[in-house]
Length: 293
Length: 185
Image (cartoon, rainbow over all chains, first blue to last red; front, side, top):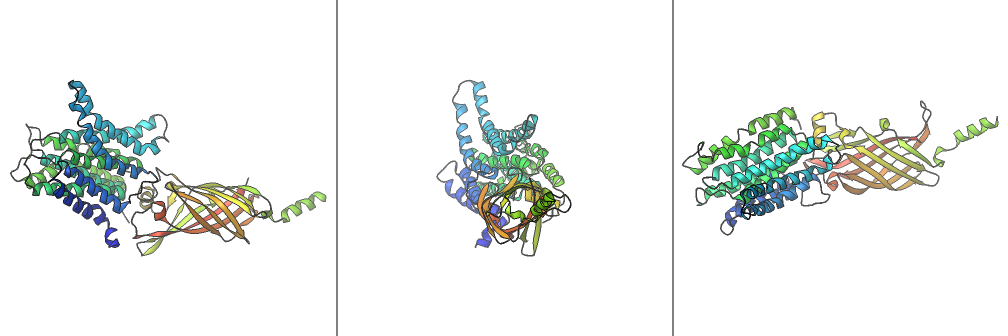
């Protein structure tokens, strides 16, 4: 049994998928945000199997795990704040809060290295990391708030972002980061399967909590991989285009993919959203050089 | 004549009887490690940059060792693997650039010693015991400086320090040996 649990494919794919699928199928009956909890549950199992649940010493990887398990809830709460003020300007400002929170989280994660830098080097190192985390969460939030026929676009964004992060970090950075990102994609895949199996309204998306539950860990993993490993910063630029490609699926004049069968639309949407991931993989591959174990 | 007698006497005195402080010679101090690779073979590696201090007083039976290892200097003879060892999968060299050993107790046994101390890897500190077969002190034949050297060995589990990647395929037990030479201050 232990041998089975030590297998990376079980840790990063099978276990999070099964756990997330069961949670998604069970929780959606009682809880509107159940799919989000399913992704967090799947990720939690992967963490338990790969790194263990120890939090001391507080390494950067453990900071990513803590943020991944807690920040989706915080970000979801921040979503309610823009509804409060009457001023449109204030509403727009409050929409930036999740992005600012993720930028701060990214800075916290790379802080042990940033504090050893001086002058401009601090900003050269920190700004792409913080900006990427902010852009991914901002894009994910904007996409998550669109309700009409949003399922395939939202799901494709979450799935492709997680898989793209998994592939690029595995190639050019760290197998552990890759495993954790693949766990998110497996859990997201389970939620999508549950959504496609269910009798939910065609327009229903996976939910904001699910969107954030998938986006927070992968945003932080890719961002940290540029500092703690050798993931090229340009990879972040490519991956940051994923929410934009997903959003293009929804804007009315374009409506690139509109198919009768949801699973077909899901596949087509995922292929479309994967376009910016291809150069990201190429960049990671080029940076990594020949791989040998 | 008197001066010559004093000089000869000084040279003949066992150097271990004097308390002295030494600075580690980085060009002759290398922590080496071996680890099982997938059950097929034993992988050898070393860290190329090490600094530190020794204090020895064999007469009194006291001493101390402080060693700082530059994690980024890890070398297994294959750059790609070394980059992987520096990544968060193993040593996370960017976040934890140093491995340190600070002795807490040195017990001399004949020519050798047992050095117990705190080994810190990736922010995790564990007590380990280094076995030293023989501490060899004398005048360096080329630079004429007073030098002490020894080989210290121990075995540890990498999982104790949070390095769990690829367990159990890549071995958990790590044999660590440190060849040390230090020059008297």
